[in-house]
Figure 1: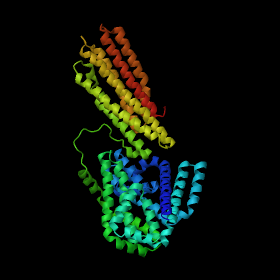
Figure 2 (figure 1 turned 180 degrees about the horizontal axis):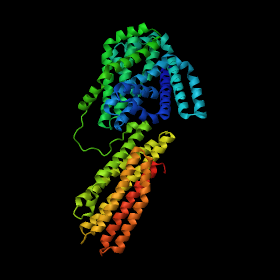
Figure 3 (figure 1 turned 45 degrees about the horizontal axis):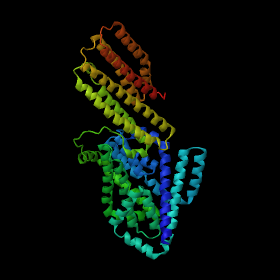
Figure 4 (figure 1 turned 90 degrees about the vertical axis):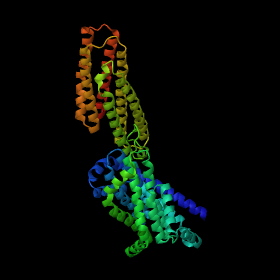
Length: 528
């Protein structure tokens, strides 16, 4: 009987968790592309942010997934720390939907959901089919767990053992916390508590304690995902954990009162537990929501930025790879960061490269190219991991575009580094470039830099008109290069072949920069 009980509970739990995963993936695919706009619109204040969190978690059916997504948005700079506080509190309420559905004994219709999900998946929409199929597995798994625990109802020894184990509410909370942290799903923990309570193996107080522990356990995933993220993302995850702990500390001495309130509401014990889960999160949100801004200030003090050399990668984090929409947003931000490094560290003071006495500036550009290489490789490998996920067509196209742009930005850094290497020859040359040659190179550089800055702007703003301006400027830059080359060979008075090769190599590399800028613009308008 013990073996059958363990097999039934573990097997049912496995189906339950797999169903949650399938449903969550389907919901991500069908709605995640709209999350960025949705969150940017409804996070203007904490109350609307809390509403956004409810919708987000209800859609994903996982406060852990919702929290990881919010941490990713904060890391990508799409949400501020203050905005994220309200979203976190609201996300806890959104996940109570699953527990309420289980309390309605909808498990009886699990096979209908599975059959309908398979039909929709094969005939119509894969994402909607996955949602239905996932919920079908959730309810089916819950049914298996319930059936496996039937012997407990008739065996006083089992019932007595569970009552003994859950006699201490603190220990019960810790057990539920650890279990939820392992399975990364509070709904699964609470669903098992419902089954145990229905069999008479759990008192109502112990079941509510499991609800407390399950709510704290959901913070572990977000905390892990924030380890390598930005400071604000770490602050968001820690604040979420503190919110949960404060809620439990507030409710723990009031547990008998909560049980009495649930008795007055009525219904079977599963429904009471579901109501208790909802009441805990709603009251917790109402108490803490007014203090969100103050919490954000406290988190800045608690997790301060230490004085150290900033890492080259600003936005990418491994935790967001499970949510491709967030991961792609972070790549986009990292590409923007890459373009800023190029602008400030490599394009800056280009004219100094043509002066033989500026060796330090050349070395700075050469060293910066190594930083660009680090960012390039990080973006490349991160995008490769994203492409291995089950992406929508839109996400696949976006990841391909980012691979192209990442390559072009790295190509620009290579060309600028090569100019620095080329102009090192000026340091040992017996004479310098003519003034009109230097002026010609600087004029060409200005046009090339203008195209580069416009291409970056077109990418960041997703503006096809600006991208077309860069493409339309290309013939003018090519003509200007031919004029400079002609003037150099036809009218040039410099007899040094070494200086001639420096001049030609520099304008060739500027053309390479312009070529990559045009390629970025082609990518923006979809010509890949």
